[in-house]
Image (tube, rainbow, N blue to C red):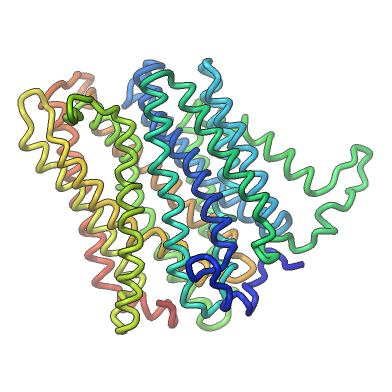
Length: 505
């Protein structure tokens, strides 16, 4: 039985049963697709639900809670990845995470305000076990030198975004059009489908993702309660959910906790780098550097679920053929573009690689930052052409999402693949968790930026119409300048970063 750190078997190179890739990729593709259906279905509704149903003011309560949730949901993967590496194994961690997340969505479906925080707490902890370990398992399907790995992660990323495309259409339409809680409940159904698919298809994973020592994991701890390490881990996971709920009730507490954890994780990564021989130190240094720019990208991109969602609801002409499209449904636009463009980018990278012109990882990251910045620049152009009512044409929003999507495709699947290449073999799960922790910090930054767009951001005044849209435009203009400058800087220093990669493209 393979352990959690076992690399892909040599036979994996000959497994082409899923569009030229290992059959196990199909299991992970559809499992992640349904998990992302649940996640993005809830995400499309969350800020709108808090503002329009619970009456939270966006800049004082809704954005901070959303930011703290986004931060915690990407912070817990550090713990989940480490627990899977050390004891639980990837497969068991994915199942535990799926169960917790399904319970979280169904809790959100309860029509009482406390259910919001407990449901989000369950989602945070569940995501911590699910997300880093399913991504790490994708990497284990390929031998170390298998050139299909990057393309495999791009296919996997299509699964993520197929779920992300369908979710706002179904959950958003049901939540805004019928009742919010039915939308949250439908997200839970998606999570259950993904969990069942994973359990039924686990035999195609070839033994990857099993615990390092299954006997030690399930051996009694000498307690009269019949406890073993696996039961203790499961119990601690359920106990962590109400603690996460309390942190979301007081979002500033959750944010400070994440920042403290981030410092500790950075020190551990530095310690791991120091332990690596030769080129391993350089690779870990490159990984830490990429994590920083990864955080900057998502700090800009993650306006989508908060300020962009509110701007769409209030300042975008959403009428198409006489139907006013609910704002939450526009959360599907980014995912639709990814499903359409991911095959194009996959073929482009393959063509450029065959001609030895494939851009290096840091160049792709730099291009991603420039493109996400240009997306916000497009919105400032649209805002400058809005009428006195502060309503801009729909095309500007779609163009913004298009640029954000092409940027995301240059960064996210490439980054996931890079972690599995650069991380020390026995610490892949932890490093994947640390990678997602950068998104946690990005959510904290994104919440602070989103608050600046609030209609009451100026000395307690309440802005309306074109003045309120101008507030969005001013903030988005600054985001454009910062993201584009960071991207250009990374492209300029990319030859130095490429040396750290020590041969990794």
